[in-house]
Structure formats: C-alpha cells, structure tokens
Image (cartoon, rainbow, N blue to C red; front, side, top):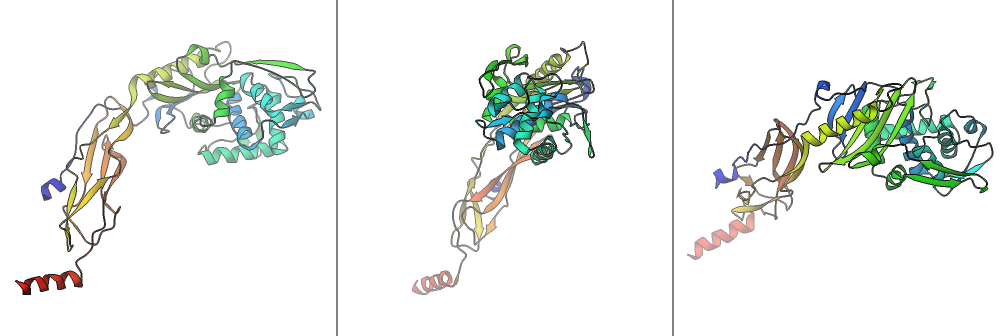
Length: 381
C-alpha cells in the first residue's frame, strides 16, 4: 500500500511552448508587436512588446471601455468649443449640439472621429484632463502599468508627466478586458451605423474601417490608428484553432504603406494558430484512493482529487510532466477537505498548475474512550 500511495505519476506528451519566440521567427514590418492568448494572458510572441511608443487611435479602445463602464449610453452629451475644434478625422460636431452617448461611441470606434472622443471625455469626467487621469488609473487597475494617455483620441500630446503612449503589451492587456464587455464587441463589430443629433436636423452614417472583420477568418474586434509619430497601428482580437488571440502592432510602416499592419496581424495570427493549441491534460488518478492513518480509529482515509484534468495552452515541442506528491501515511486527526498533497503539472520543468489532493471525511484521533473500550474487550476475553 505504501508503494501505491507514494507512486509518482509522470508522462511526456506533445504540447506547446510557454515562452514567447524570438522576433526572427515571424516576419513583421512593425517595430513593436505582441500576440497574446486572451484566456490565459500568455505571451505567444513578442517583439519589443514592453517598449513604450506612440499608439495613435488605438487609445480609443480605452476611451470606449471607460465610457461603457461608467456612463449611461442613453444620456446626451453636449459639444464644447474644444470638442468642435478637433482636427481630422472628425464627425464635424458643432458647439452646443447634443448627441446620445451611444451614437458617439459608434462614431469613435467605426470612423475613429477625434471630436467624438473629446465630447465623450468631457461628458464622462468634466474635462479632457480629468478623463485622462481616470483612464490612466483604469488602465493600471487592468495591469497596464506603462501606459500614459494624455488625450482620449490618441493624438500626439504631452503633459507634465510625459508624452502620450503605451506598450504593445499594455494594449493587449487593455483589449483583453474590452473583450469581456458585450457592448464593446457589438459596437466594434458593427459594419455600418446611422444616427442623428438630438435636434434631428443632422444625419450621419459611419462605416467600420477594420478591414479584418470581413477579410480574416475568426476576426472578433479591433481598432486601427495612425499619426505621423506613431505610424500605422492596430490592436485586435481573432479566434482561430480554438484560441482567442489578441494581436497588437505599433509603428507598422508609414505612408504609403497602409496595408503593412494587416500583413503583420495575419502573420502573427498564423503563427499562433499553427504552433499553439489548448489541450485537456488528464492524469491517471485511479490509484490515488486512500492513505494509511496513524493514531486513528480508522486504518485508512479516503482521498479526493479536486480537479482531475486541466486545460493548458501548449506547443508541439513542450514536455509535460504530471507528478503526484502525497505522503506515505498521515496522522489523525483529519478534517474533511483538508489538503494532504497535490498533483503538479509541469511544462518544460516549470510548474504551471497544481491540483489539491484532500481527505474525503473526518478522521478522529484515538482517545480515552477508544483505549477504555479496547481494555474492556481484552478483559472480557
């Protein structure tokens, strides 16, 4: 029994890599890029992904997310002089006009209108400056700690704390949170959208500029961006091969190379879908049933494995080991659910998950009454 209890489960199976590959393995125009698994947050590929850079209108995913989270979409927002004076690309709002928040979000995300961003920022926080503080704080809460947004639209700007910018990694983290918001997905996936100002006198139609939605298998959402400083940028999500992947490219060429970003994203996603996959790893736990108990009224305690299989993102050349670590015996008293050992899942020698092995029932320690009973039994023989 002791040999059975102390056995070591291990096997090697085909699986996937846990670290990002070298930049040379994927051909890119972008100066900075990342491919992230949306479920686990694991970096599948990285190229200067934590270097802060200008990121243009990809900023608007953060603006959209914040407004969706903290504002009523049916409220109306009034246009200020500052909002009306924003440079192209713009909807063309006029001072004093009012628009529904929901409609402005479509203008923000489909057409990337800079004036819509400012109207929304002022509505949400009273001023662009206050809004910037709020979205920076929100980004840090998400885990995007190298982000500093000065404007809600991503236009190049600076303040006392530095220039407007973020990292490919931070944008992927932000997008990971955006994907959990159904309104965000609905807006960014809309092909066309028409609306009018509150007076009903002015009518507008917006068209989605995310070409991947109609040309790439599994495209979920995304946002383009461009300034002369940032170059062409993109952040988006794609589902292929059972994985939801977030792709970010920054400085992916300058005019006239507008299509470079699409090529980069395709290469990133192709790499991820070709080399990675999720697998359910199931150990043989049939022999993990019970454990000898010392100083107890019971000789054994039944064992329970809380989770018998795990869902791991793996690569073909990964080595996976499953090890069971439990003692040869234990000692009373024991309480139901008490941890007695664990199953460890190791990828390339590094533990990535553990599953607790617990006892199924209470086990009492031998006490006075147990010894008294045994004594009485002996005398009665």
